[in-house]
View 1 (tube, rainbow, N blue to C red):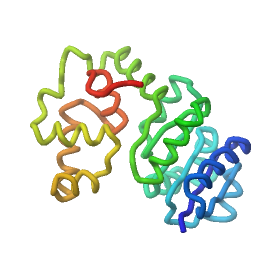
View 2 (cartoon, rainbow, N blue to C red):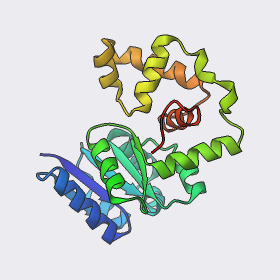
View 3 (cartoon, rainbow, N blue to C red):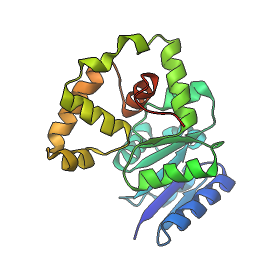
View 4 (cartoon, rainbow, N blue to C red):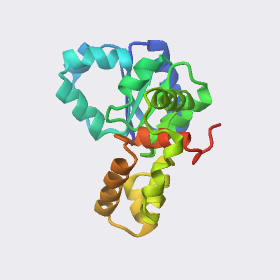
Length: 216
């Protein structure tokens, strides 16, 4: 039996996400909370197979639950973050310990893909989020295309880099390449350093900016 937790202040959006989850995974037990106070009173039953949290809920929950408890919850469960398409918000919040990022204005098909990816333990950043990250990187002078930083990667690092940008988990990469997860994490750390990135989201951003992935 799968368990999902939906945390946004928008009850209509919560209902829509619940409908998507029931369509994809009919036997899932779904917990919905529109206010951090109710979550604090009822507690959190973990582990969970999926967490969706909205930007406004997150901001309030940092005060109500405490930032440490909230971060622990999000880092331990496959978490999908959702906000508006506001560019500054996306840039500020994409660094959280999350599996994916969507916006409330995305097409249903894209939201559904984000939900499915996180349930399956894969990274997912919607096209509007990736576009914002690319534009901000260029604006801030980070990862300029002409530098081709990925040319500094070894063949193995390049292989792992591309698998990360495709949403593969460390375990999936390890199984595919017959490596230990520890070795994959070590390669990932080196890749982040060589490409001047701080997160998987920035690796995806870099791959798009270099033309290594095709944008739909």
